[in-house]
Length: 261
View 1 (cartoon, rainbow, N blue to C red):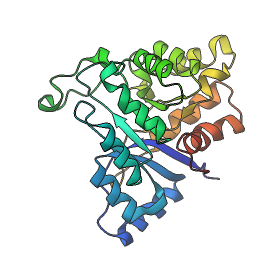
View 2 (view 1 turned 135 degrees about the vertical axis):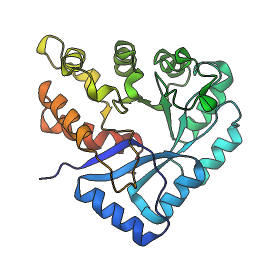
View 3 (view 1 turned 180 degrees about the vertical axis):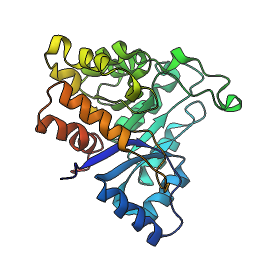
View 4 (view 1 turned 120 degrees about the horizontal axis):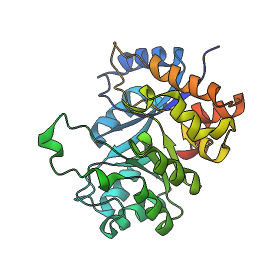
């Protein structure tokens, strides 16, 4: 039986028409991916909604240093369910961003944060980036000031795994994922010790994890199997039962983005 999942962190440009979109959706759902959290610029995400329907959970990527509260409010009126923050010019917890977070909370949306290392492959885009500005500790500071803001900590703070562990389980509204190109290639011993220290499952640090890959969808060469293998091996290795596995694979993302409403 295929495990039903929501991929809580993906990218990609959608197909151009509904027929092609349906083929991709049918393909992914046959593999167990029931929905994706698509993180792109607003026009790309809106196009994906048009051609792929409820397969797409829309998250708009913004530039926090030029975005305004009115802009954020407008995005939610356009149908987005979350706002993605990445590559800020100042630390995420800087007071200048607080009103953006407050608007997201008021709109009952999700703030998705890139945490940790950011690719250096395009220096022209990311020359200003300071790794420390995107550390998990900033989400702790935000949660203290906007406690009703639902957050998704993407990439588990790579390489600040311990910091992400502490922050994510300490706040009820901070969810986390292990997406990206590094977490799934790290030793399983690291993850077992984080989530089941000394072989004892530590439920508070596991129960708000979300399955996520950070890969590019709508690509015929898509290979999500390594992420299936990673999450399944991790959950089996820490002794997670079916109920907990279902929460991580599907239920947590559904709850975070309020799909059940």
